[in-house]
Length: 236
Image 1 (cartoon, rainbow, N blue to C red):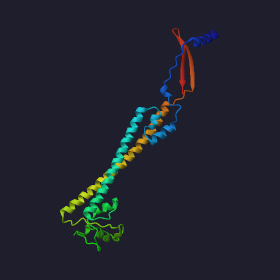
Image 2: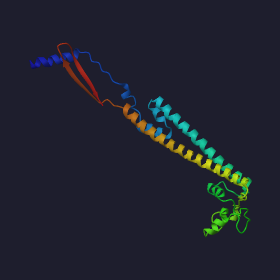
Image 3: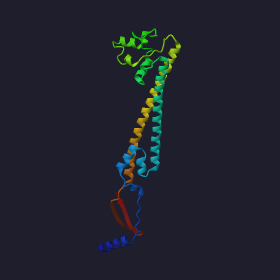
Image 4: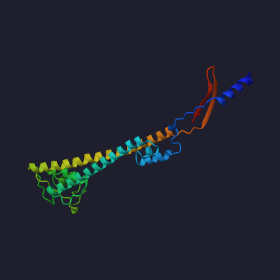
């Protein structure tokens, strides 16, 4: 009886129809490199996905990165132009011919109406509005940071004149726009870095999901009164 059952099973294996169905998506990237896909994503978000055949996700990462590049370039140019405009405005209305394109110094000119002291006449009646007087009160030399020989001189005019006050306010508004644009530029750079991190992690996830290597085949025969055949199971 035992030999008969063994013979019956063998006959069923030989004559039964075997249908094997394998999802190709599970192994379509098994011959590709995960390191390469991650490295490509770090350099250009979307490149790693394109390498793995994920064109729709590649396009999404690529266009996000392109938009961030445009945002970074636009905000940098605007920030730089506002700083240059502020310097030109100070040269025109405060006589700051030697003013460098330096944010710290330009901010200083927005905080004090003039730099007068013993060498230059200060048009402002309030000494607290004069840079030199502020340095003397602080126990510092008047050329502590910005020596006279480099031409760091300015004078917006008397605080009694509303027009000079309006000019200082306009000047400080230019510097404010510069700072805001600079922050936006830095945020754009941070978003570009984050987009690359997300692209690398997503490329790694997709590779692991689509690089299965089928390595073990299990065949289990079965026989019932109504039908017979075998179960085929791939493990990877």
